Image (cartoon, rainbow, N blue to C red; front, top):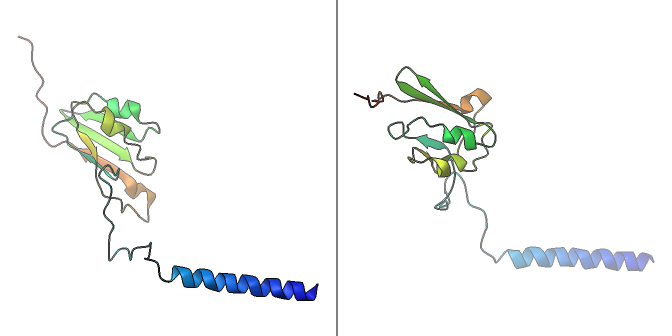
Length: 135
């Protein structure tokens, strides 16, 4: 019984060494981040980018957001968009549903902050919208 336990331990010790030896000749899977960065996929969904010149204020992006992370308000003649990145699940529904393609997802994924409130994006359009007048 004692000999069987000893042989079993030796067997698993040799098996572990063999596994380490086998993997020492394979290419590394990890990357030395942040010195080296990997190429992101074409459809990667990172931080939001809002083009206020294209936005018409239809609020479709706000309606399709499953976690209610997007809020659009009209302030005088401008639009103000607030995106709560702490709530956002980066599903891309806002980008896909925008008829004017005013909101896009960038490749920026480095969003680590010390304060949760720093994850709130408040974007205000600078140009005034010209509404068509009926004569």
